[in-house]
Image (cartoon, rainbow, N blue to C red; front, side, top):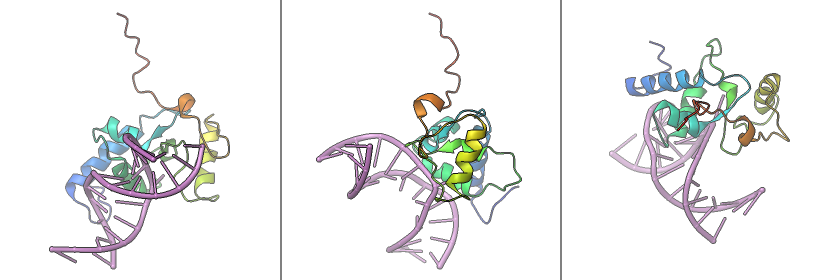
Length: 119
DNA sequence: AGGGTGACGGGCC
DNA sequence: GGGCCCGCCACCC
């Protein structure tokens, strides 16, 4: 198992579900922590997403930079290694920001909402 | 066994 | 718009 440190089997399983959800976020879109939690089956547990993200090995193919907070901002520490890095990666994917703020109305990931529900 | 700490968020004011 | 408070809960002293 990819057990990071010592964490409960429960938490490890939750993290996997969360990372799997994050992998579904397409380039050019972003999702909030709360949104990922909900989509992964853990409504109201945004902090669990933060926890999962904190422990993602860099080598792993998880688009961590596509997860931002509900204010449309990076929750990483200010600086080139934190917010700058995340905003840079997002910019490469076409996600624009004004003074570090991303317009969620434009770039929020909308899982399967594109499915036309014809009446 | 307690208390503190978060890559959070919603509700209020 | 911004700030505060409180719920959340896994982990770490």
